[in-house]
Image (cartoon, rainbow, N blue to C red):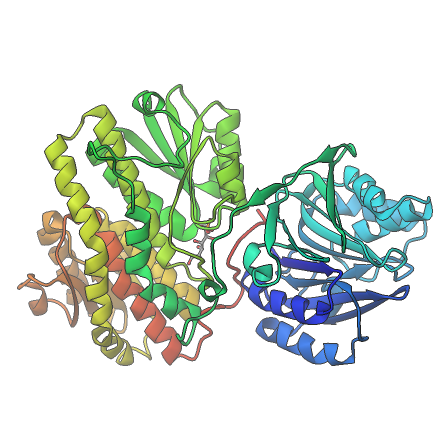
Length: 613
Ligand code: M6R
């Protein structure tokens, strides 16, 4: 997964590209590059300096030619070829005139490379992308204009791409195309833009358009026109964008992660807003699926990855308890390869903050192919997942930039629990009074999260005493289990420390052998129904020398006797605890990561949106 940006017709080409690349770094930051076109020449700069790649590129660009009115830029997350400058984009053809940037994977690159080599093309990188530059070169040599050359080149490739191509001999044109990987087009008077996402060009373009799969767009100062793979004209759909730029900035916080942790009360509140009609029924305006269809659901399957998977695991408990439906949760990258059974009445819910995670998209596509109805839970309006699904519920967490997902998780749990209550309402598995009381509880969550945030100092104090620790186990029962999994994921991804999440009852079946002095056990103990059992599990690890941090409710008067450190949270219905209990676990990971000097927003080896399988 990578970020791409392009601009044509601008007096501020270089500044636009560098600013856009900075905003796209969340998509990958192994290397970065720019190509500018002017007077029949292509000028290129590339750097491979890890998280400093765009900063280094800025320095390189001090030598860039002046007054270039068009250019393309790329920030890379390496797939084919090491993260070195020679594999950084843009890639050029043999003549050095054609420049290309690409997000995705060209699956048949090896056979194309062989074929092109046999015809005398010279390759300078080991990337899959470079083959497209040489294909376009050949087609241009036959006299095709750039749009047709790119279109015909794409007929030869298999795989996923958001691509942008320039040719120095057609300097006022960029051709962009998309299959699977995200791509938007923007316009302003006399200027056209393209980017992997809207924020990259948010303060430059005044109108935004979605590019669909297998559409190719020719951008010039006069505007753009789009065709499909056969060359037939297509219209791009205009997007309604109501983000302001501040949403994409840090808003006074040291980093995006702490800003996003602090935004969680709003994320939950916004996600729950306007979801009830006057008659008490729960309604999702954007859900394009009828009540009757929801009533006919017989089984639910949730597919997701990472943090979204943990939100899905919470939803399993809620849907089963409230709507009395059988629920399975699948790791999206496993789902499509295990020949899943999709019976009549199966509802598949794809959960993804970005809506662009290819594993989740492929899983929901597989489910659709097998006859399931698919609902997307997405934080990004018009994301690929949202567009392909039969129905969508948007979380309203706002743009999440930090690689470690935080506010998206609480918003996903809120949306999924609301959907669980809607299913219960339709299936009449809860009384109107029960639903009313649960809805009230759900609406209180936002305030409880704010309370936990106001106690942030308690967590920092615990973290300060643990900077030498290396091994963490996070344990919980019932919905405390997915909370523990999510707490462990946060810790490992931003501190690089060993952390495992376990169902507390499962410890005695093996992992207990690893517990010894020096190991930290973080126990989620807030579920009133499971309290005695989890206290026994805490006693088991204490007896073996572990240091215990307990997340406990304000009214728990037993926990101090068994835990070394206690972090308090307000008590609620157990089903809502993941949205509250995760907050101290996020803060613990954050505080430790800062104490260890880690880059919390951009942890090593990761990227915000994973658009490769
Ligand atoms: O955009 P998605 O929700 O589909 O992303 C899924 C995972 O890649 C994501 O949650 C990842 O695990 C985060 N880095 C976790 O913090």
